[in-house]
Image 1 (spheres, rainbow, N blue to C red):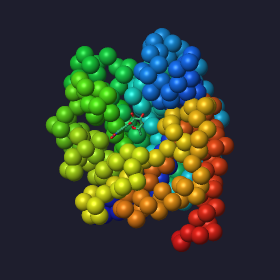
Image 2: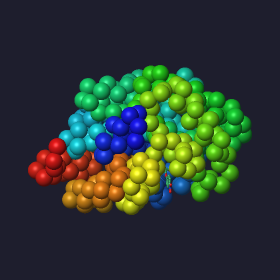
Image 3: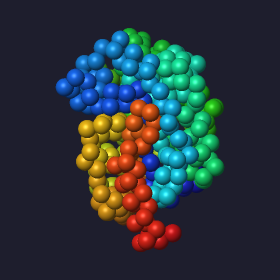
Length: 305
Ligand code: JFZ
């Protein structure tokens, strides 16, 4: 693999963070349960969701503590949701007001804090960015206009935070049969991204998950990895069963299981991107932090540097 992707190839283990206003529901809406898909899966109206998002106040988000948690677990990079399918931007975007500062009145910039803490600790920071956007009517009504705004947001992210990686999502048609995202859209976006950031690494969901799309493949919740040499790979896994925070989801994998999964994946040539979903105040639940500190303890005792 080329020098641009070398750090990723060697990193093996990263932290995924799913954090957004969906966390405020804590996984429950009436009797309906979901996490980051709760808006759609539980048929929540935009007025309800927007009101909840306005109350989003992650005052206890501690970028340094999260970076330390990642570091001691042996993770070399962090990928946080900058915008999930709900379209809510976690940074103060100028493209719209549907963001943590303008809509929720939260003055801190969590992506800035995470970037600074990561850089200070030798950890790379990347951003998840959903192509599929439930909130912007242009996604369905005027797709070219939507793509222009998407590029403007990506330009902001690259200019302001210089991410090492962009993790695209929402390009598929399985749960979105009318998704207009095409191979051509992917190729155009890849050219755009390469222009604004020569070094950034992208996953294959920037396009249609062909071998030629992006820098690496993303088999989800699968331990298989790929035939060696075909493509760089990264599998994302949850510690419990949900990506976003769900108070009821207490079935945490043990550190032993997670170390085994990491070994299986790395021996199959895939990185592991292991997810945490912070609580609405921004803290990491004991179940998730315990799993990561447990992995760190195992590595310290048994791992090679
Ligand atoms: C997506 C998101 O819908 C989900 O909320 C989460 O962010 C996850 C990491 O990514 O879900 C997917 C994406 C791709 C597949 C399945 C679920 N896939 O390739 O089968």
